[in-house]
Image (cartoon, rainbow, N blue to C red; front, top):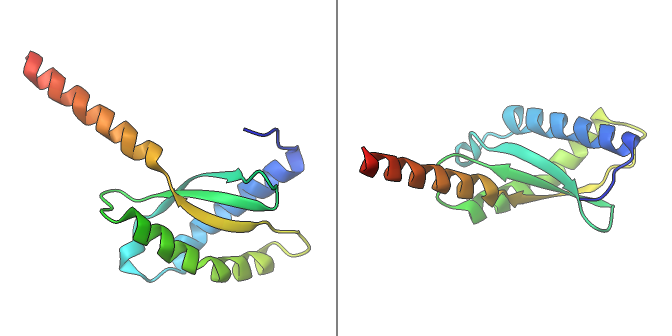
Length: 117
């Protein structure tokens, strides 16, 4: 991961908190209920952020990602008002597969433990 200066790191933390709040308060789509941000990373360009998201028991990751990206202009509008006088990066939502892989590993460990006992 890139080295991020402290000012930008603070901005990313503020964006993370604000987006998490907005996802809970401004999103009325039940298909996005329970979606949460797992991490935020700058894209290589430095002008955009990847907002990694996950939702437990979500069968259609692509649809969740698309719905959130469709709401991106709304989130940007709200962020501009909450964080005035800041140059805000564009946000792009992506599904965080790391949690799915971790869950699969835990399920496999439990299966092995059951067989061993």
